[in-house]
Amino acid sequence: MSNLLHLSPGDFIDFLKKEEIQRFHFVYDESARKLISSHSALQPIAEQILANKRDFDAHEGLFFQVTHEYPTLQGAFVHRTNRGQAAGGTRFWPYATVGSFLEDGLRLARGMTYKNALAGLWWGGGKGIIVRNPQHDHFDPAVRQSLFREYGEFMSALRGCYVTAEDVGTNTDDIDQIFKKTRFTTCISPALGGSGNPSVPTALGVVRGMEAALHFLGEGTLAGKTIAVQGVGNVGQPLIQYLFESGVGKVIATDISERNVESCKKRFAGKPLEARTVAKDDHSILNTACDILAPCATGAILNPTTIPGIRAKVICGAANNQLEDGERDDRALFDHGIIYVPDFLVNRMGIVNCANEQYGYIANDPLKNQHLNKDWDKSIYQMTVHVLSLAKEKGLTPGASAQKVAAELSRENHPILGHRGQQIIDSLVADHWYEQ
Image (tube, rainbow, N blue to C red; front, side):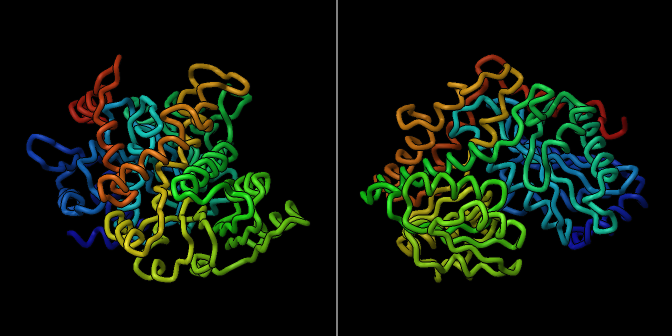
């Protein structure tokens, strides 16, 4: 039965159909230290998840459904909700196996817990994933409308233990479809009272992390530096814009999309930019001689295969889960003398931009801008300097230092609501939400 993790999402959907399962969950019992499935047929998966010490970290609840109109696997991963309901975006992405889907969701949810805590937000950590079904055209507006509306119904069924947002593979139009079926989403379009696309402030947050790392190293400012950027999409291009405004000497960039690369070349014509299109598995940009390497594409690209060839002094980018194995690869970078600025420390502006949009919109919002200045003690710049300084003082890797600070902050209970997210999860289990 553990072989269920090796099934493709499509084959797993067929299995669920035979078992007459449309919605299901895995919920952690902290007192018994067990992960309990809603259905006995799926308990072997719960045991496999619990045994995954790398990715499973006492996640409070993992919730799933198969959509009706275009059968697709959808998930909501809730890590820790002490600081508030779990918050994080929903990505629309292909996965080869059920196991890879679950592992990614677990890592991403935990990353959001740390990111929100370090940002000083009163939100817990969670992540949503809609698995692309290759049998459906994911560019077809009718398919997307159906999938995201059903995801909205899924959010409503979960009663707010997780509040979703925009992420990789999704856009504001998709979020607006979710919003038609639930109140538990952010990043809706400005026309509906939301904050819209967070890519630009996310890029500026990464720049602040770069500046902090250079300051920590005594390397001055970004002026004249060479920066290598992997991925020139929604975040990569604004990042390059800010880098040129900061006076960098050169930007070297790659992307798997020819359209993105050509757009980038056109946008920065006359600037010291080298941009090229690469194959999906071409990570040669990581071997570029540069001052700072900025991964802004997919995760897990820093691993035993790629790390030995990295020639950057600093790694600081927007991509989530850049380390394939957090502890192992963080240590390897440290041993190679490379300063790794954890992604969850610097790419917070996506969630900052939208997390509290229910409190209204202010142009040039001071509550958002404080994250990007250099004075506030919880700003990206100050937290990066603090984490790197703590690592040096305690003999820790930057990743371990950031996780130590984040883990402590993440266990602070919301000052008004307490640990309400866990209470919502308990009520879902008691009411057999998956049967409704």
